[in-house]
Image (cartoon, rainbow, N blue to C red):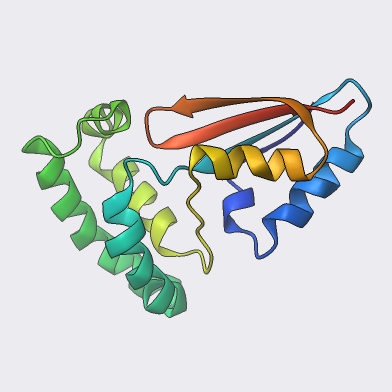
Amino acid sequence: MVFSIGVIHHLENPELAVRNMAKACKPGGRVLIWLYGEENNGWIVHLFNPVRRHLFSRLPIRLNNGLAWGLTGILWSMLKFGFGKQPYYDFLRRIPFQHLKHIVLDHMLPKIALYYRRDQAAALLAQAGLQEIHSEWVNQISWSVCGKKI
């Protein structure tokens, strides 16, 4: 098993990374990746992601850390008032504020954050020559995709 959890969607060339994962895998082995999903993340893809790309990813970490407190307060309030019906938001409603702040900060910092539809996520593995590709929708906001090296 060769796997990547939460890395591929931050790479400049995710196709190359998955091809290299497939090369590292023995015949009969599996490659598994977990990716941000485009489905049910419209507000992140269309609103937050452009701000992250053009502003947050260019700011010093200390400044982002300070800004994350305010953004987390907004998200925390939205969650308490019922924002988000997917299972992931139910999880976020149960975690401590500090943990939620770390998740917010984690979304602010990367220079690259790609969001994949199911077919695009599966295509990453197919283009790397993997077969028997299976996609699992995780918490209705992300994809776990596994393929077998023949």
